[in-house]
Amino acid sequence: MMETKQWVVKGNPPIDDPSIQEAAALLREGGLVAFPTETVYGLGADARRTDAVEGIFAAKGRPSDNPLIVHIAAEEQLVELVQEVDELSLQLARAFWPGPLTLVLPVRPGALSHRVTAGLSTVGVRMPDHPVALRLIEAAGCPVAAPSANRSGRPSPTLASHVREDLDGRIGGLLDGGPTGVGLESTVVEVTPDRRIHILRPGGVTAEELAAAAGGAPVTMDPGLLEAAADASPEAALAAADDGFAAPDGGLRPKAPGMKYAHYAPKGRLTVVQGESAEAVAVRIQQELDQARAAGERTGVLAPAEHAGRYQADLVVSCGSLADPALAARELFASLRQFDEAQITCLYAEAYADRGIGMAVMNRLLKAAGHRVIRV
Ligand code: TXA
Ligand code: MG
Image (cartoon, rainbow, N blue to C red; front, side):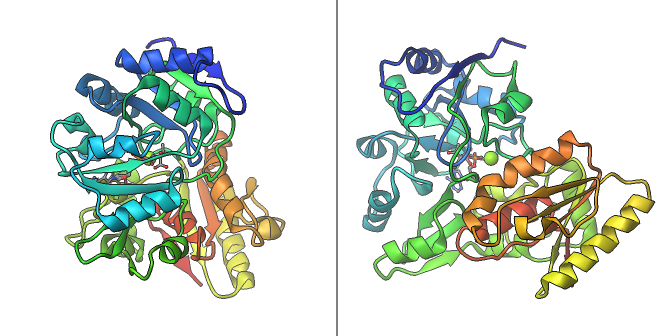
């Protein structure tokens, strides 16, 4: 265990802010610093140093075949990291950076530690839209590799307290910049040779927004993602929940290696209930809760604000609102953590509408549930 140094940073700090300078010095020395971005908190290290990047995998308990996103603070840094930037990728960078979009591009040999790319010939790069993240990267003067700052398998952190829960004593520093804005991670895309914008992970930038900025280029979803979203067998779901890995199914592999892992999972057994009729969903969830309670489980429900009052359980968490899909994105990970705090052993979530940012919400929720879904 080491002491995790903490700095509280408010608003828009200047680059010579002492907290930013200390945190940047730690990064330059090969240390690990957690910092806020507009999506979730990231766990940063100098992306050129293998010793530093190995520290990320160790602190998180992350499988080493899962590559890291590299964070930059200026467009000029991009050309140093990648071999070439096709015109459409550049167009997307200019439309959405700084912002929650990660572009997968051919890595420039020697520019980054091989541990960042996990042996792939590509690297995911993004410019975060958060003043603390940008000042930190500028002050450090290096590309910053940063996965979400949670222990592997846990919900991503949207508050500094979540980072402390997971990583206190395992990392050198934590910049506390308050709650993150978007609440779930960036959209990961790759522009294909036939000029499609291929979504490898849905996130803060929606498919609709990508289409609008694409100048007519089609937007497609990684088929591995679609398959992962299909109803998995209960056995596969259980295996996924038990060992942190999705069960091998012999089918398509998601192209973003991270998408094959069970993620974000609360400790209790989570099931998503989906149906055309909100009433039928509520009735089914309450039936399941009553049965689980009778069997001695501590029960929980996650539902949008308008529906939360319908349920009787040990813990009902209102997450987002039907009227405001972005709020569900912002609140989802913190909501999932609440069930662990209350030691809930069996919980149910209403499905959210699968449009716009809702696509990313449902992707994370289904992963958290190990793809256990009841359809009514
Ligand atoms: O919003 C975010 O993206 C946050 C903040 C901290 O920036 N970061 C984040 O990193 O979510 P991480 O490591 O938790 O997720 C990275 C995802 C994984 O699913 C990984 O497999 C995928 O991006 N990825 C990274 N590099 C890739 C590559 N070269 N090709 C395909 N997928 C890649
Ligand atoms: Mg993550």
